Length: 451
Picture 1 (cartoon, one colour):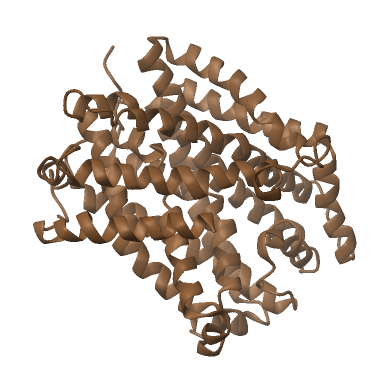
Picture 2 (tube, rainbow, N blue to C red; picture 1 turned 180 degrees about the horizontal axis):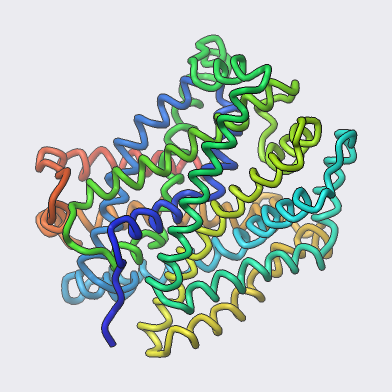
């Protein structure tokens, strides 16, 4: 059977950016900016995105485009006889399953809140306690959580079952186009609010008093972490998309475009959130509760808040669902290639499996709420710790070493694949940086994540 490819370059860019543009951008980025003093953090984030995120992204895409298969088989295609790099491919698949075990729950929260805002569950005049109580009620209801998680899982695999071009590419083009329109509309609206100037000042102008208070080292580490994790690297979510690419354009060109789109959405998310927070006297460093407690409080007190809240959570739903279908595709493609089954059968099997695997996270907030695992973390945070603090940085380090060391695929092969096509190329002068500096930066992130 002939393997599908993307119908267009735009399709690849939008699907890949959709994979990267997830909850990490539109949820984590604004509150990490808030916690780390605003503008100076944003500047450092952009620097680290260029010197860390983009190069590692090209390496993961290179393995996919050269191998033309999912991670395990691409490694086998490219590795030297007798070497065992393909074992990492199995950990990539494990990472994709584990990521979706909790990501589907959070995507379900976004969709639940979209439903709540659109149906008027949030009413003008609600107190902050009542608004916070809505999220508490969601968490305490296993039925409600399972319902929205199941909708995300079933719809995600339904899209994947239709194939790359007719399913994932077509839906991603629609969602990403709608997402970009929504984010611009929401940002323009936020900039018209009374406190917008103060919010943008906090967001984009470096506050060196805040830098001294938090500590330069802490802000640097936080910026490195965000720049690294924002592109969903290390578990082959991008590798599978690379396996469907054409060779018409160089990988640095495509990686820069994906990074720019990813960063645009992250920056614009902050332009929505910070002006709104300052306009309604809400602290911009509210942490993870920013989306589900702080912002609903802002929207509820805002003229036309039901509409703006609905649009915001529609944007959040598109952002999270675009990541879901990209990662699901990795699981579906792996099972097709490994077990020689049809796409529809692979989608059905993975759908049933994912529904069961997602249950512990859901139940961890109600039936199993007293269960604490890694370092006293609840189930969601334990799953996230394994993925974000172990599998992503270790996986990225393995992709890097595979591409630039003589024991793996090798620098010459990586450079040849990376620079095939038209567009931006990596000069050979970067070789020493890739071999000696970049691994140290990734190890620093890994060590910091384990502290």
